[in-house]
Length: 134
View 1 (cartoon, rainbow, N blue to C red):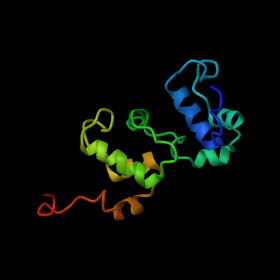
View 2 (view 1 turned 60 degrees about the vertical axis):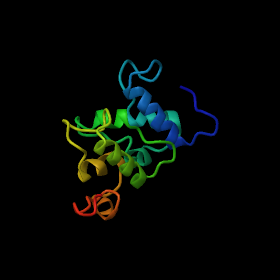
View 3 (view 1 turned 30 degrees about the horizontal axis):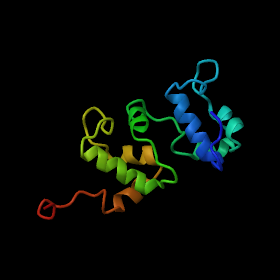
């Protein structure tokens, strides 16, 4: 799993982590997913930075499949990622729901790293009154 071109440390750590979680060949240590310490050693990012990265933080078990099905795109910021997840969830795309239900703001916050108060203010994530929906 070599670094790609001028891939930044955090981006490389994210890619390694995703490959490790998916069990791709060469992306695990002794058959186990990579730890934050191992990701830090391999990528050059510090453990402290990686601990703050929402893509690398452990999720509740019901959200892990959503992250695998809908990973963050390169350089995608928290709010746009939350919007994309929400849209996929509302459209019932495969892997974008939890127990058949659309993602809640709390779940979107956990997945994206955006805070709930920020997401509550986002007009794309707030339900419209029924008369404005059409």
